[in-house]
Image 1 (tube, protein in one colour):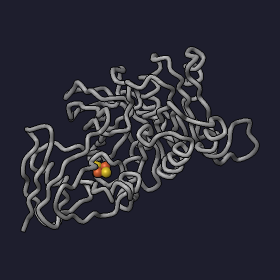
Image 2: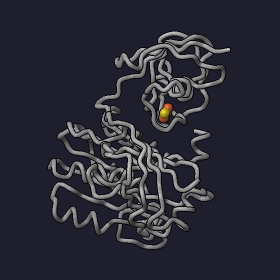
Image 3: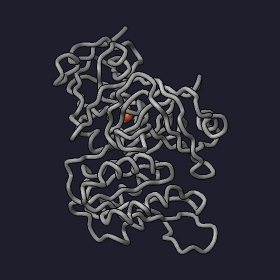
Amino acid sequence: MSYKISLKMTDAATAGEFENPMGRTILESVLAAGADYPHGCRAGNCGACKSHLISGEVEMSPYSEFALSNEEKARGLILACRAVPWSDCEIEPIAVEDAAVHASRRLECRVAEIEAATHDIRIVRLDILSGGPFDYTAGQYAELTFDGLPPRDFSMAAAPGADHLEFHVRRVAGGTVTTHVLENLSVGDPVRVSGPMGTAHYRAGHKGPMLLLAGGSGLAPIKAIIEAALAGGQGLFVYFGARDERDIYLESHFQDLAARHGNLKFTVVLSEPDGPTMRRTGFLADAVGADFTGLDGFKAYLAGPPVMVESATEALTGLGLARRDCHADAFYTEPEKSNP
Ligand code: FES
């Protein structure tokens, strides 16, 4: 038993009809047929597969409200990665503003450098051996496969065109992949990289000031966006949230950049300092609220744990930032992906 999915796309090569076996999501069926469809996390968290359900009925498995708001749902939008058809359906992916369109690549890479950034974060730099060139927009991410382990998503941490691909890997409690990277990965090891993906990427057309909020290893995509935007001259207000002193990394790198570029301001905010500190403390959203009375004309980029991204997004929109000017990449762990 299967249903028919009619896909409306501006790309005539992809538009068409697809069989959807019972129980499969729309995204799974379209990709299994070898067609392209906008997507990212495949788990109801990022919103990249948001689509109009023009006709038909679907059942949605759990997803993050960050990916699809109740108001969007009421307007007939669905997430193709969560939607299982219960009838023939007609759908159309929504146009993503300033979508970053790059060829999807599968690269064979080699570990060139590993740097201990903090007690639980490693900066891993890769050389591309084959499958390139790898074009992407700052802020996007890729799927990395380390020697026989399940693939995981990590953000590119350097602007496109840098000498190496750079990723920041933070240990996830009980995570086999991140534990492998922290404890066993060696220079010379092979790594497969597939991508790029993600819609929380740098919009070069915006010439106004930018607010960049990073929590933990969420500094990776924010670093890439800073590197891509620095020469533009607009104000770049960066807030880096860390638990305590030992969780701060790349501070001297950004201080040096700020000393050379008057348009960059880098502020560290500690959420759980173990003792008195001269630094800013509290949550990122509170620090931004204390520094700005309004965010008219800004664009914001946020990356980090879901709770930080969601609370900061709410705070920024409360300060007058339009939702369309708020681009966020929430880092979900594998268990969180299963239960958004
Ligand atoms: S791919 Fe569907 S929400 Fe991310």
